Image 1 (cartoon, rainbow, N blue to C red):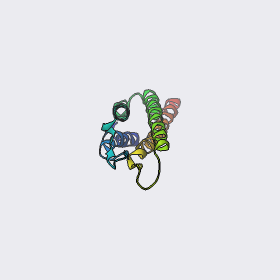
Image 2 (image 1 turned 60 degrees about the vertical axis):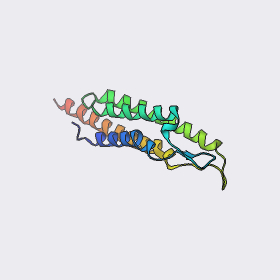
Image 3 (image 1 turned 30 degrees about the vertical axis):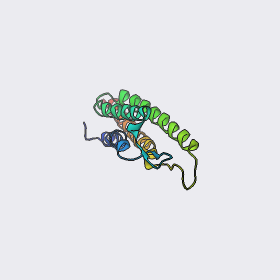
Image 4 (image 1 turned 60 degrees about the horizontal axis):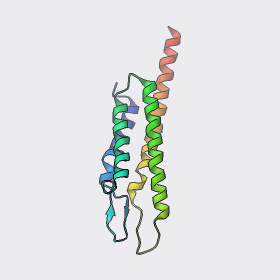
Length: 136
């Protein structure tokens, strides 16, 4: 059942982590040149791993417990990425002629929100199935 709401949330995570980091800049360097995810191997690999994990999780709709666990793993991966960005933003100096933070640093936060919403919907489905099984 790909029409469930958690599939929509997971598709939004795939878009947020698979496509947007390569279009939105993460920060600008000292020369004013924007830095994208593909410029750093660690960031691009973590973004792509999160997108692939969310895409695989969409098709595990028959295995709700496994889907829930993989979403939690993806959540931890996005928290790890968010930690990288927080560290990076803290070491970037502020001011007028120095690097600035980009909108791409907020993508893990958006992904975390959608993953939490997907986990809530999966939990709701699992509770519904358990309640129906009790009536049999």
